[in-house]
Length: 315
Image (cartoon, rainbow, N blue to C red; front, side):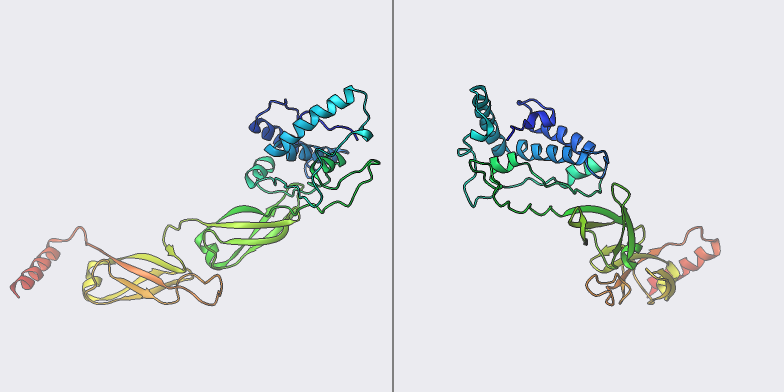
């Protein structure tokens, strides 16, 4: 079994920092990823790069690998052959488990632009398996039963919706590396932080669309309730009347009670957002009156107002 120089695979020195190792891995993983590079041998190269990163990005594995490497070089200098090398001090004990470092969402985004499958992550070499316990070897190098590869970590991708899309529900078309497309259905009632699960769409793992509902210029949202300020002219506030009010579906006429003060809030039941758990149920719409003072009054209008003021003060 040949010794694998993981530093050489990533093109870094043995003194490389964690950041240098990560940068080299990202560059090579993007270059040889099977969804990007269709050349013969690219997938095998991608697996070699991934294997090297699994070791060198983990402090404990890297320390063990460095110790093993020096012993292997001494052994070969003394004329030894791979088949006679004593693996005992480095093999993991029976029943042990090897921990894997899964690529993070940030790393995936930086490598593949936000979306993309990560197929082909498995396939570790016999060298890796022997050194880190994924199936021991004995004198004749007959491979023992391998443990199954761990499941990929679920991924997240943020999507922006406006309030109307969150109210009605919508669809999003997602394009992956290699041209693959899927259409995701966003249910009505989602909020910022809601997650929509797309089963098996992240290289065999699940992809979660994390929703961000953008601020609306008209409505403010609190849970499933909506809040709206409505300008009401002075005369309607004093005498009562109707004003037009927008809702999420259509404009309506709202009755303003006589003598309403600025800041008075009226509740319109069932005109808020749909419930994510039960789209047949809705929150409420709360309308706050904002009285507007008339401008550019005529002399006659001012006289009438002065007369009204005198009448009020005389009471």
